[in-house]
Length: 127
Image (cartoon, rainbow, N blue to C red; front, side):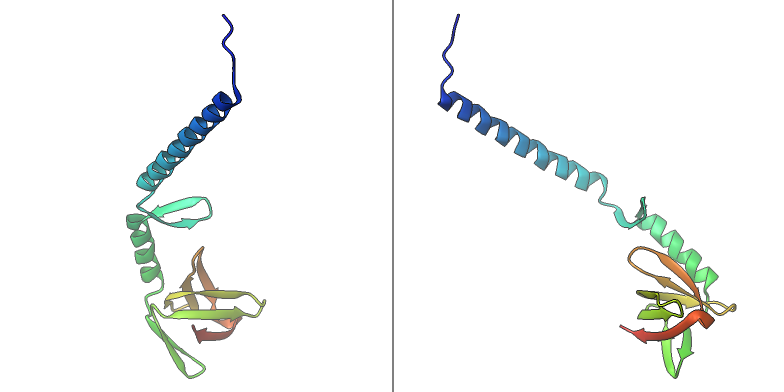
């Protein structure tokens, strides 16, 4: 039994296949959003939930308990958005978490949590 295959049949099949792929992608994106909605921060290959991030921030606050410090006459407080330039020409921008008794500051950037020696810092200014 030979059934003739017309160009309109091929175009219709391609159109239907495209719609099916489109629907599958939409459902895939919705599933991905539902499974990762608590993930708010990615550090490297690690995704952190709100609870994990809160635990990490509490540890930073314990390790860096001093809430404010003075740098060249300017007072910086915990939670300030600052830019730090080191003596190796590295620039870090983020939120100040605190300072400890060993002259180190803790800075939370969009990708990392950084602890930096104060004597290695050339300049600090608020963003």
